[in-house]
Image (cartoon, rainbow, N blue to C red; front, side):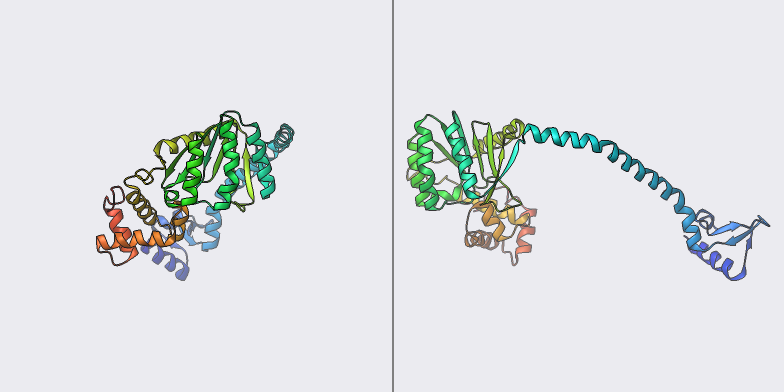
Length: 312
């Protein structure tokens, strides 16, 4: 509504119906309307009535659409019931496993039935010694049966003695192990037939999803293969335990995640390193760029190519 229209509307309220030309906005908004007894006179209309007149056709159209949506929903309700019934009778392709003992039993069954290949991604950095001791006999038994095994860890396991000792034993038996700075969540795939992933909405240590849908398992296996191609091979020799640029790669990953807004705690979990190590990488970058704050460092990194190039 223009200023002139507002002034004319005020005059019509104060002095009564007006004759002659008036601002177009008053007519479009319905605030002035011809009188029945004399169409040449324009009388003021209360804003709430004018608003109601403008809204009525729109509200009517919305109501029709709402009725149409409800009709669609009602029409498909019967089909939805049939779909769910048939899906339930056919057996679900994704099962929720609750409880460590249930998960262990499912994994043991898959190990016993495995015939060709085991793919495993284990994020989180160095693994607990007791977990390594528990899984070693199972992995060696599979290798003895001729099962191909490929395992992805994060770079930080290369400085963890117990994990390196485990890797040395399984690679000697024929397994392949590689590491990345950052990998996806925990993943186990048997024979590209069944996959196990944690449920992120529940306790990841007490729940898992067993997935047997061929398309989903194929997708997860493809994701694993792509990560494997980018990973560094682990060789248990003094010269090859650490890749040449592992420290620089880790610092680059830390800074990239910091620029993206991750906290030190979140970065440490994603990269499998301690928060102290995260802070050390950020501090060294700040010193290199003469940054006085984390915000300024993020700005300088985002404006430069240092996150893409090796940060020394």
